Image (tube, rainbow, N blue to C red; front, side, top):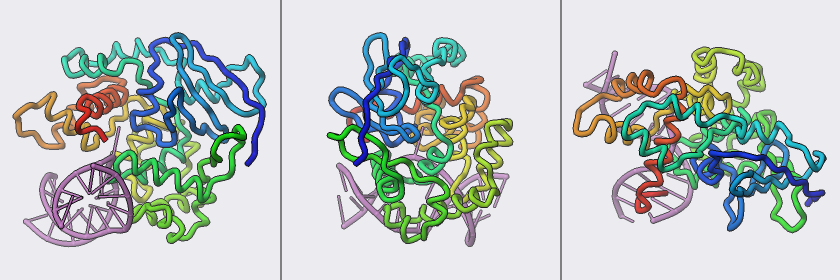
Length: 294
DNA sequence: AGCCAGGCTAAAT
DNA sequence: ATTTAGCATGGC
């Protein structure tokens, strides 16, 4: 396997919880080790650790020794002023509890195609299973990535071009089941230029959502995940079974309310960074009871 | 063994 | 306009 020279990048941060960020179900390729996190950002292998004052990245490549490359800070969103985001959250007890539980949790800015694919593959899957499918997909269809020689080989996330050339059977071999035809058709629509992912960031959130909803296997939930986790539309509010359960229990205890009523509630109650608030609620309810954690 | 998993879709009320 | 099954697969 390819190897290269390890570079070290130090990013001073405060209010950053790397573990909560990488384990909160927004990205699916990070592997936790005893002392850090191993994964891929774009075409680069990266080893991440956190100290009191810094995020430290070891990577393989050509950046200078004192570089603070924008690809890394952009992905990690280390420049985001978290305090000003948290200030926009509603001042109610559920939100305060969620922020207490995972303060420092950040939203990443992921590559749109990788994010879209990951969430097309996410439906009715547990997070561990999504991780397995994505790992298999990269192993089968990705390109080798330069990594330190003593480590397991890593692969880039396969491009839409590569996926579009697959047969449905090849994708099904990656254990994705009924999601295979959806991913295949989505890749082919993107290859044909029917949906232009590179352009969505220039649109309004509603226009961008409308475009994403044209893709097979993409409904409101997955569209909102991509808007939030890849494009940085921080008002996009994905409602999955966990968040719906949390909203019912925390904001409408022992009341009979429709999904639609809750959807309308989320659109107004959580403010301009509603999606950010959602991620805090999601991670909070998933981690607060170890017994039910998956 | 049976149930459920960061849902979507078409069909049935 | 809202509700419901079916969809592959794997972990518990």
